[in-house]
Length: 136
Image (cartoon, rainbow, N blue to C red; front, side, top):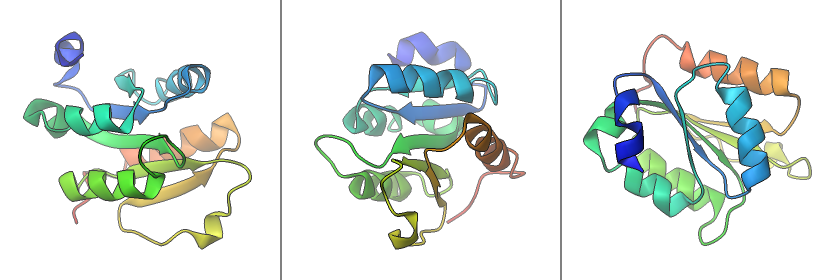
């Protein structure tokens, strides 16, 4: 997989972690409007393996994930990602039925209810155009 995206490593990357192929395709299309360099993986384990590559991690500007996944909870995944790359913001897209007010405030983590495509684009643009990478 990394070999297929090697040409993108000099660009700002968004890592999309989504197990649902249809939802992931829709989200990837939306994210590619912010930057064409979106890499989609279908599991948290695959995402954590990808960030172990120094070149990939250096180019990574944003991680977008859902709050529910199999094998690991969304909170555990976010915690692992923040521990490995504290300077990279994480956007967690919550389902409509989840209460965002109950989420802990964690530096570098933004929660967004799965709302309109425009809201997602605006949020992603804001996170990408933050000026520079966040620091822990």
